[in-house]
Length: 161
Image 1 (cartoon, rainbow, N blue to C red):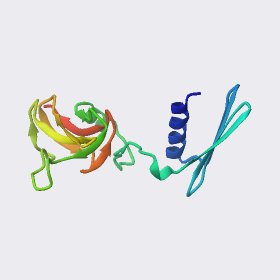
Image 2 (cartoon, rainbow, N blue to C red):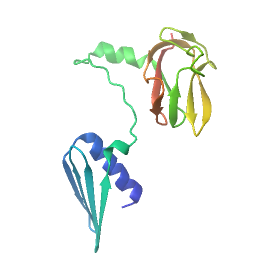
Image 3 (cartoon, one colour):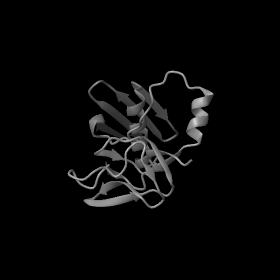
């Protein structure tokens, strides 16, 4: 099992809220225990024993915006299918305006055209403009200003009609 796979498993378990997960394969035995303050991972490869303490506060996870509607109806699903999402092309920090004293690029209800700048994403001290590939109306902004974003994370919901 690769180190990257183990790290992804640890992140998954930390997000899931499970208190303990055990995984046994022919040459690897992994136990991940999570507590309120710390997560501990024990990996046993014949005959080596390794313990990797994990501080769950340092895990960077994508921000997911979830609507608080208890019941999802067919109408809501049909309505969402006609909307198009503008997604993050890179990992970085999402900004709705180019500088603190400038106006926001777009707001909910604004009409945009293909090629319009909708936000900037800072990655390694470089500010990358994100341009819309579609024309339409901004229905929803899915990420808070100055928030970290992941590659391909939805940023805006656009109604192309």
